[in-house]
Image 1: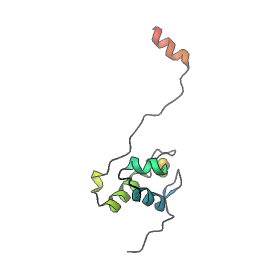
Image 2: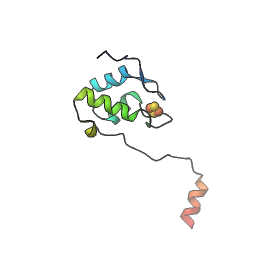
Image 3: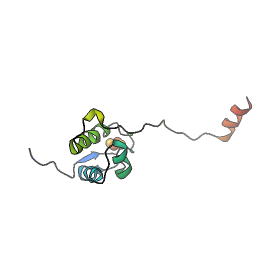
Image 4: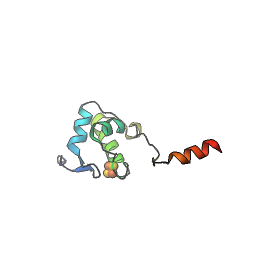
Length: 93
Ligand code: FES
């Protein structure tokens, strides 16, 4: 099998390449969150919808883990600014 192009984009939103993901794994990232912290893969506009599974697959291949055992990224709800008056109104209700 031919060697994959190291400059292929794994995370299009953050422009993270295969080489960057592999380097993160070589530095000790064994979970999607570990790669995310080192490369920002998964922190883009799509919040990892496009790249999370690819990152998990690469981690599984490089570390010999079962793909189902690779820890997924931590999901957080979207945050929006809220006016203090809104919070104050709820506290006084
Ligand atoms: S492709 Fe990675 S966050 Fe969108």
